[in-house]
Length: 277
Image 1 (tube, rainbow, N blue to C red):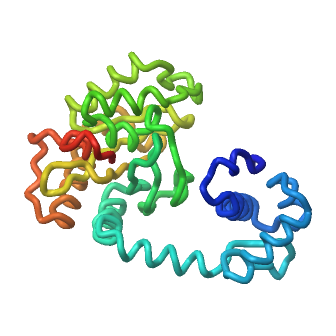
Image 2 (image 1 turned 120 degrees about the vertical axis):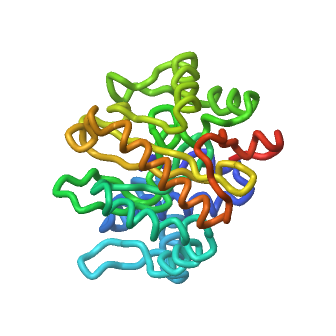
């Protein structure tokens, strides 16, 4: 966990410190006072006041085995967030059935600040399970979910997204420049689905397709991920068609729109330049 930096630029710096504390506790459950102070890089008095306040609010708690963990208040807030999210609430039953059908781990995700973020994760009945978690973030340039979320952005909005990408080398197949990424997105638009072929992690292949509202605007995406053995070349195209069909089923369930794979999806930005995904 990086130390607290640039919080002074926030309108409420104390809130930024609180979020940094939550992230530290979430990433390393069981950290004690000294460990949290080191992670945050704050004075002892500031760290003490911050921890005390977060405990009083129920956002973190002392663990029976020592150190601190996340509090039950976060579970309550997460539950409320899930209930208020129509896509997440209605998509999960369909995604759960789909995961059992294809026997692969499936995700639901959205676009936020240049990254794809997992909103939900469901497992299929497989002995080999790819590790991931809700809230996990990936660069859009090397994740199937991210590609499917930004591929249909209006040109000017896509330019803004690409301009902010770092293009970090994660795997030998990771795209490392804007030109190649644009070519990759062109293939996504042509096929109607996106592929991550060992670009994010070794021995891992992922297929994703967008979820659209009744206006054809992309609001989320789903993905199916497995090992190279689980998602082999012989299965790739058939599985991609299944992922697209599942994404369309969610679009129909949530937005009561007859999704058609022949109709090119659009991003929110394609409808209005002032909007983002």
